[in-house]
Image 1 (cartoon, helix red, strand yellow):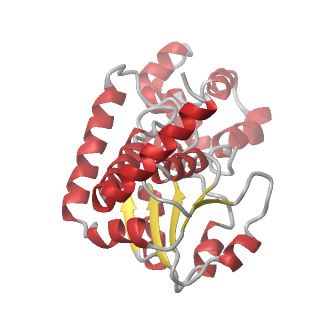
Image 2 (cartoon, rainbow, N blue to C red):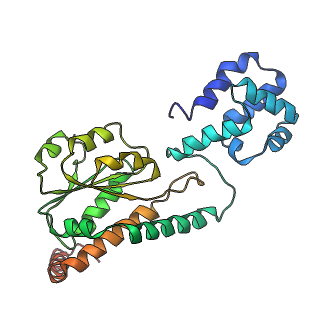
Image 3 (tube, rainbow, N blue to C red):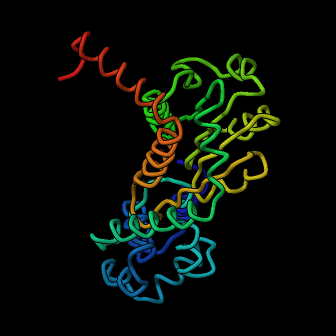
Length: 272
């Protein structure tokens, strides 16, 4: 857990010895169910723990929070960072938020100057795609899709390898796609700094907009903070859109390459 996410738990442990019996009942409940702070009111917490609403408010203040809302705000910030946490009981919320996020992406793409990005994806001598952690499968998918319409697309770094050698080999004319969705590795900013001067497309979520000045192009995928685990439908949709636009620019060359790939699949009997 991050320092922020463990703050509530740490505070409870720090004060536990000195708590009253009612407060310990609350402490025991929240140690097992910290997410309940987000989805239950003070009255509801009091009822399930068989204590008064005043006892809940007093307990929250004893932990160092101003009130229930300030505690909720801390836990919401934890969720925004990407850490799984139950925040809603609405079973349809995830689909509604997903649709809203996709609509935000559509509006962003309509306003963005995509032509330079598509031209770079189609015409750059070489494309380097970088992604760590949950951004790695996105980077891998981006690379695999681009390989259907053009060559010289590399995924960095290779599994088990560090990236220093790869960064040193990137040329000025190469196009670099960096994907950093939430909970980015600690050297993320340093990688961007090392690539200053290169043509960079940064694909990130709303928390990564702080790196906008370090990239030539920025596309933001708004992630849903109201469900415990993230859906990657929005960045996957973005990747699909970019690659299909690239395919359309390359036209006959892309068609010829994809046909050649299909021929190899058939000769090697790799697919059903």
